[in-house]
Length: 323
Image (cartoon, rainbow, N blue to C red; front, side, top):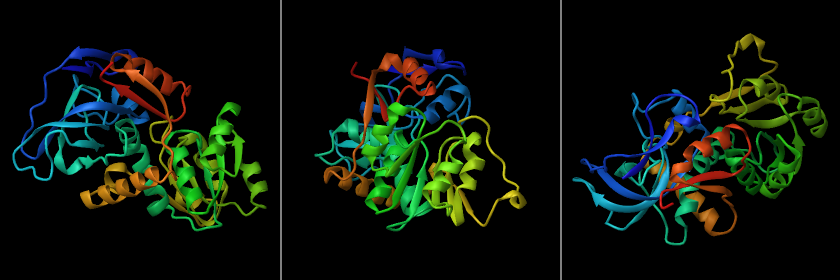
């Protein structure tokens, strides 16, 4: 089969299309013919040596959707031809993948494979943020970084569905419309931490109930500053720049800080099916839009990584192994 292989750690240029052995299902696994693989910012860290599945060579990518083509021993509840999606399974930048059955999510007939693939990591992350990390009530206010982006755009939509007021941050003027379309009530164009005074003005000096910050170290302190008393900072930007450190006595007020480790916040199959089921329901009902901004051929993975690192994209990026 064809796969995108990392033979040495480095920049986007190390992603090369190669012939790779077809997977064989071990006990408890499914082999899936991949329709689409999701491209995530964390994949750029994997390529560079942060959170790798092992020593090179390896196939990156952790999410996708496709059809079951082989079933290992001990697996029940799946049949050849079933459509499934997955996340947290390395090797997704390929034509085929072996997926542990307990990580395979059945895809409803009325959810297209590209939408299912695009929903898994960013959708589950956003869903956990707004239902577990900082479940805001109607009328409460949130500040959402990168409100036109993948996770930020879904967070914005889900918060709006809960009746929260959303102040969105975007990096460029041309992203304002996308953030408003996602449900942001106000949108600020900001680079770095220059948003503090404007957010305080919009909240009459009170600050926000929660900040959803994927901006890295440069925005961490300003995000703390705009929280109101006992507000929550949901931080999820460890791959962007330096990782911030916290000295408890330096906190500006009584606040909560949470870092939601993906593998931990969806830590069993019951939660996986519950969260994905709610996301698929909202997509089906037209309440949640999954924005796929670009579909790349499998051999263009390096270009996709260059695009995502240059911040030239918004919404979800996918690889299409059929191309």
